[in-house]
Amino acid sequence: MHRYQILIEYVGTNFIGWQIQPKGQSVQKLIQNTISKLLKEKINLIGSGRTDQGVHAWGQSAHFDTKKKTINTRKFIQSLNFFLNKKLVSITEIKKRNLNFHARYLAKERIYEFIILNRIAPPSLDKNKAWHIRKKLDFEIMKKGAKKLLGTHDFSTFRASNCYSKNPIRTLKKINIKRINEKIVIQFKSKSFLRNQVRSMVGCLAYLGQKKWSLKKFENVFKSKKRTLCAPPAPASGLFLEKVTY
Image (cartoon, rainbow, N blue to C red; front, side, top):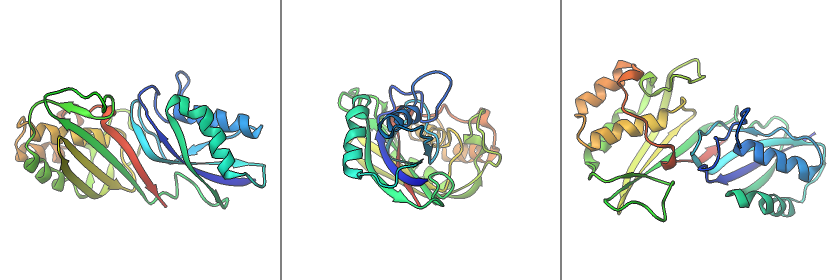
């Protein structure tokens, strides 16, 4: 068998998420079926991790095994994208890997980016690709709140009730929050995240920015480890899987 890694860009709006499920179109299923047809063999595609319904990706990573010794990667990418791009999915790169490579288990870091559009006018160009908040956000207090999340903590407050991870302890290596004109862009870097963790953290930071919470309240909610105290999660439309590093 021969193993290949692919890098994937997609708009998640019309998918049920990355993961194959009994019903609905997933990104994983679409790509897996397309590769299988092109290679004329049954392919099992393994992704670096799940993205929920409506979440986008600039750099999702996945791998598959094939019996074919060689693949003309340039031609293969073009053929894949001929079918996939109609669904707003693109394969941006393909790499030959050894059989020890694993897209999920060998990932060292996952980088997510969340985009908030903070203005009165609703988005047109960024429709379904940002969280539109009309009320002016206090950017400085959001930065202070973000710093509180750095490091190794029990992130149970930000964990979905149906999260499949056994351990709520995670290490948030980096949070970069910046304002670019009318947009607030928040980047999170960690080896792994709990289900809904990023969207839940952004939801709480938005409560801070809207003055619904004080910084003390934000800290208390975080330390409580109680999901019931968490602010509503930010919508999936603003979230992007930016990069997976190995």
